[in-house]
Image (cartoon, rainbow, N blue to C red; front, side):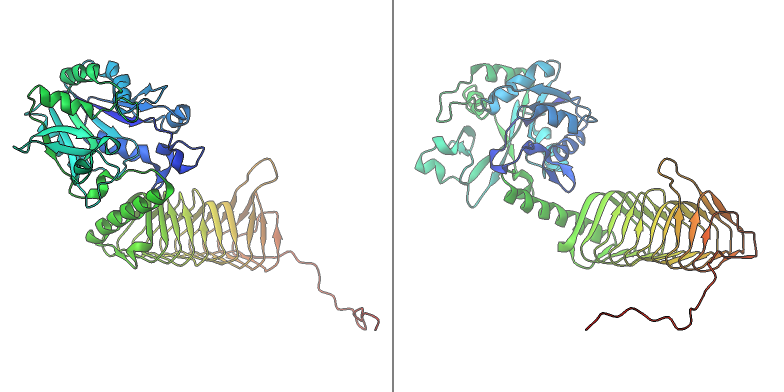
Length: 454
């Protein structure tokens, strides 16, 4: 059975009060629509069609790497009308699954259960039981509990509004039957739109047994209409991720103050303190400890390494048993070996730091190779940029760089060399020698500091 998926993503989202199309607003760092696409792709469908409308060019550009077909709904005339736009792209499918681009927490497990029902009936619908069903279409059943119709909230009678079983909008249908039903729906309703839900009544009149199932968690079918709802779903999603991590052996100091906006791979006994943000692809080895208020993006951290408070690490690799921070920044292509120390207000970019080396205070290393066992004093900088080109600094094993040193690249400091504090090094510093560049200290006898006249 070839399954085609239609994702309805044409709504303007006026209540978001934004120039950005609603389905591009981020949840956990990804557009709402990207979450729905991921859930759909987990089913391994034959084809995915996204129906876009408002801000369609922005939507297509933001998700250009997604393997899907794009269909425009130039005029928004209801969900039924939107699905009709997609049907020509699904002519060779056996069945069609309809999803929504602003309902991001739907799970593949729920969708698999819904699609499985389509093996025995031409139409299956995902419903839910709500304590307050206001605003939702109600599921109407006959005396034998068979689904006969869905009535929209604005078209419902007072008795129908008392029904708690609601339509989530998700359905899967036999392709040929769906085409037939869509051909017969009309816009004779309070909204003047073509409702997809009208196919339910048409199917029931034909004697089709309409199957239903419900999600395990009601949040799966919660849509986003404004920024308040978006924030609510963000916290629900983050709580899900936090619980999954804790079950895998990660300790979170406070699951309510943790944000995962990508993918986090962990080994046992990782500890993550409050207000940590994980972005992109991050891997934390066993025993890693991450202090409060850190941002980790696209990085790999080795076993038993400690990242102290308020660090930012992006596109970097750190070895085992290292100590980073507090207030350190590792920029792209920073590579730190085992047992390294990088301290407060240190920035490292495109630099390799060898095993056991220490860069503890107020230092910038860019475009450098630092050997093993090197000590870099406070206030040291590599002057790697002349305004046009970048140049490399090389520091040999066991070198000692005195505080407040400027290493003007391209330059090499030999193994075991010592650089005196306050030096500006522009030429090679020989191995195992002391190199320093300082003006001669002078004391002027009898000099008086100027004073203000009273």
